[in-house]
Image (tube, rainbow, N blue to C red; front, side, top):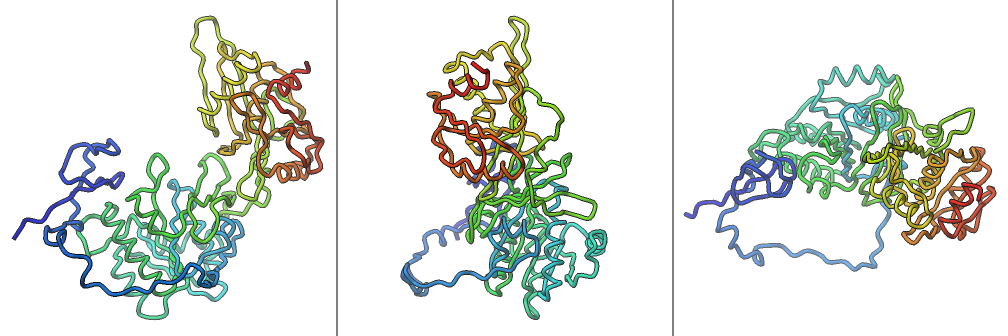
Length: 455
């Protein structure tokens, strides 16, 4: 009989190799290739004719009427917003985040609210004992919630227990990296174990109509640990973001088969747990008595929700011959380099002899291209040491030609700024609706700089 072929799987990136090596060829990490006992393929299996021995499947038309999936609201509006309306029956959701960010706290709060409505909820922890989870629930004021707790790591034991009676409406596994399947060899947390454990749990959820939530660890670069296929197996991937030194937390949908990925939920970490933030702009705006050069307010847009954040810039002139430094926190450093280049090439401003520092207040991360004009305004204000009006917001995209281009949902941004007491908007000239603000429109970055400098 022919000898089975072996394969080796990287425990960091999940890449597969036919032979062992000291370094992974894809991610470059050392000593991460481990033999995958569950992936042995024999030559007979490889040559087997896949066109025989199967069963016929039913094909349906694209125009077939399909009812919308039923939603199970968590009772936490910000969580439901990120999910697209709530948990979906027979679906799998993966939530990842840094250690201590509040994943278990958020899910325990959601589980308690769902259980208090009369639905069955099972919370299985592979990292903590049941008493530890119970103590956290008491600290959060949820000690009387009828949530079923268990501390287990064997997938077979979990599924056997849940399959004996009526399956729970919601099943939370904390975390998937601690689960172990006895169908294959390997320690918990390895690529093969994470893949096999998740596959068994997801199959149970699909067959029994249970909404499954998996908690996932993240690597040092912020990606979810384990095989990349794990994110493809689930229906929804949520990223819980935030810094321990800051109070706020942002729940962002990275993937959602039942809704959009442009919504976020905003929470604040308090002694009683995570509380919802109805007005996120209050977290990211700095209250000051006098204007400071280099600061401007930018109305960012997260899905359908505008969030006002403060962009802060600082320039420091250096002695001749010194190498200037560029530091960016909360924005793309490459995009700031582009804005600096456009300001120098199209507007005649020189930043070559200055150190430039850019910061988004509150630890918020901006990915909206409409922040270009706000960043340019902060840089020009810091360089000229001229404060901007405190009642003004700025937004717009800047092209390499120096053109100020329009952005989406400008009226929505203006209306949110007007609610918070701002009176004017520095925006592209193509912006038609001011949303209650006094609009100053600009076609080119040069005209915008002249307006800021009073030329």
